[in-house]
Image (cartoon, rainbow, N blue to C red):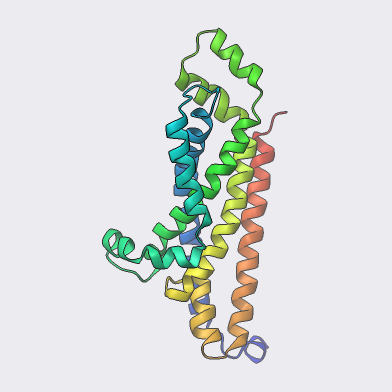
Amino acid sequence: MFNDIFPNVQMDQMWVATYETFYMTIISIIATFIFGIILGLLLYLTDRGNLWANSTLNTITASVVNIFRAIPFIILILLLIPFTDFLMGTIRGPNAALPALIIGAAPFYARLVEIALKEVDKGVIEAAQAMGAKAHTIIFKVLLPESMPALISGITVTAIALISYTAMAGVIGAGGLGDLAYMQGFQRRNFDVVFLCTVFIVVIVFIFQFLGDWSSRKVDHR
């Protein structure tokens, strides 16, 4: 029955591609979360009236974030080919996609982090300062814990974007379901392969959305 509906699908290839998509997504989510938090904190803390207010540093950080957010992902991949080759030693396969995925997603997440931090009650921060709390204490004991539900919601949105990025990266041979759909499906006019790859990607999106929503509810004690 399955072979009648999907005559061109080879499930061993499908499972390998699914693993590659999960691999690229999970590694890039972890790195994006770390770098996004750092950039988001810089954007927030160096803004006017905050702990490390510094207009020059804020302008530089905001400019870097805005520039990389403005570049379409498929173009970013091409621009980063020399850097990727230098860093990873190859421009093909799941590992080669990671630099572009992280550099493309971290600035996007950084803005979500900044928004989440701005929603933290100023009174809580002022109370911590009044008790003599140092900057690192305010960051790790007030800002990040208070904004954690929004930070998790933000990384969930970013994860969904990253899944679509992995599919686009497949066009240049990065592996994963996007690569399989394009190389084995579209180019060979095997549209049953394209369809099943799409179904698998949608399932992955639902998994990450469910996990993100569940995690956000677990840490939200309001």
